[in-house]
Length: 140
Image (cartoon, rainbow, N blue to C red; front, side, top):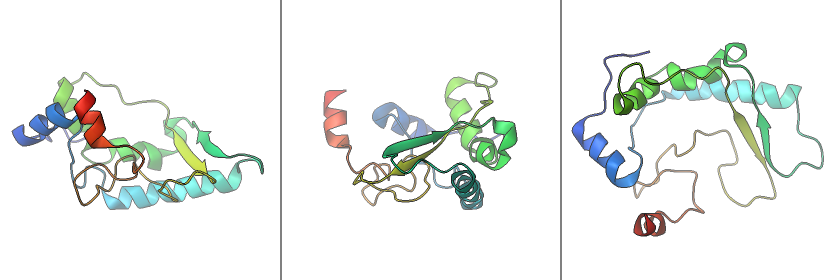
């Protein structure tokens, strides 16, 4: 983990205002690629049944899939989250979740993704086109 990584004042203000900060490279692309390969192998080894539609979940122990655990701990993401709560206040999970979305769901991403990544051109988190953030902000 990267103990010296912290959100700056602008990112903390963004978190307070929007409920999330956009942090480029909080999860480095090489970790995303490695995680995607592991998810491909999970789906090949333990495929969803032929009648499965919608979400299909895998919940392996983090130690069994270090490339998936590294999505949180292998870059600055965990340290950045802990900079909001205080040093030593978060625990690294012992389990990870990988979710496939089996069509006919019409939304993206159509491939592995980290929720909200990459951001849309207008700044809202990516992969959530069904969520109207202006409505969410207006009601919170």
